[in-house]
Image (cartoon, rainbow, N blue to C red; front, side):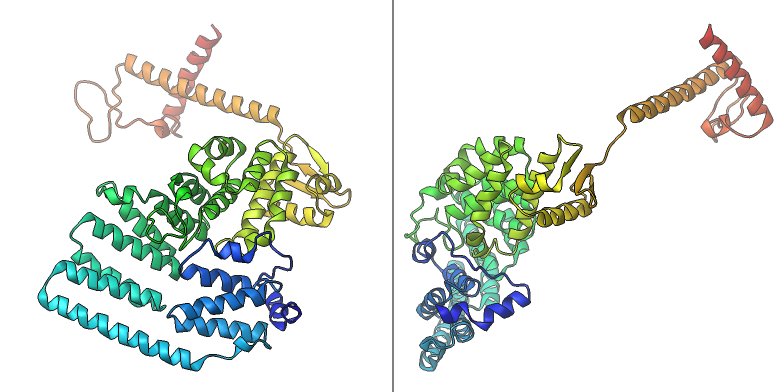
Amino acid sequence: MASASESAYFAQARQVGRPVVKDLPKFDLDAYIANYRGRTRFDRLLLIGTTSPLLAPEALKYALAEAKQGRDVGRYDTAVSAIREIVPGDPSATPDLSWKEKINKQVKAESDRLETELKGYKNNLIKESIRMGYDDLGQHFHRTGDLISSVKAYGKMRDFCTTPSHVVIMNLRLISVSIDQGNWLAVQTNVQKLRSPGQQFAEAQRLTAKLSAAMGLALLASGNYKEAAQEFIDADPRMVQARLDDPADEEAFNEVMTPNDVAVYGGLCALASMDRTDLQKQVLDNSKFRSYLELEPHIRRAITFFVSSKYSSCLSILESYRSDYLLDMYLQQHLSELYFRIRSKAIQQYFIPFSCATLAALATAFDTKEQTIEQELIDMIKRGNLDARIDLVDRVVLATTVDSRRKVHEHALKMAKDYERTAHLRILRMEMLNAGLEVAEKGKAGGGSTTFGTVGEDHLYGSSSASQLFSENIGKSMRSGLRG
């Protein structure tokens, strides 16, 4: 434990700007990782081990054990390398070369067998067998960490899918691999294919919770927080009742995320992108999302406090869980931006009733230091999130004043000028018609009456003396008529 906390690895990580979590999270590592299955277990353990000095030895030991249970030698090498850097004295820092050689032989033998079987299926021209051969090959590549080959194998399944259920299976496989790759555009594309209005897949209707969670995760990773929040809060609650320990349960999605993650991701994205009215209507009053919020009551309390304008209480709850969220593989890169947006919205709402406020009062209201709140206000003003100025001499924040009376006067004068101009043009046209003059479009002048060609607004306000004299006479008659 001491060696991990004093490791040069974390000192270097701080220097290059990588997050290092000094405090213990609120979750228990064993209970936390037991909620997941599949490849995400290793990814989450490795992230915790390389981010938290206090949990590093235990997390990396679990990650190494997880890698040895699978057939991805690359992951085993990654875990050994991390242990060597962070806990150099640990016996696990020495790679097991015999195990690696044995697994490599088994992987090559399995690959050769599956490819040979697939060739046989192609020779027999049986579509279903070919589809299953590509499916087996794609799953094999996925388990062994060859994600590019896995995507290629699943992509070749498309021509041999004969039923809607086959198409659903293929797209779900591609979604899973794309998430592991971090290819969020491919995730969105495959989800949209299953949601396509022209192709209603009955099998996909049972997987709406998975599709919403996958799309929300892709949008979160892309920085589209409002759209991500909408996907998460619209997720079907059937995922909550899923049996996480049963791989056959189609409702479970814990190879990627759990229902608790849906509540956290959806709640934070909603807080960062929605106003108080939308938070009340779309989140707190949402019967679907309420099932998820019950799993993470602190997120529900934070949203309730924000809606009730108790911003300090909301922010203190979120701050108490910062360590937990920094150890989440999907939230870590976005947590600073999400928290900044939530705090910015809170400061905006707090500042609305005031024309000025002292930095000390703002720091007290948001339970922080003056220097911190000052820097936050500067960032908000630069981004255009706050229309205010900071007086560093008197240490006050001044709202940008708007002269509403002047704006109303300017608007009224503009409307009066527009009305006068329009009335002038209409009376001018009426007088021309009464005088027997024809106002014809260009190229359509006919006989029977005197034609002056095209007469538009530019001609009516032209510089010729005749036009000016005619306009003045009409203007005089209009003004005399208005005075009468």
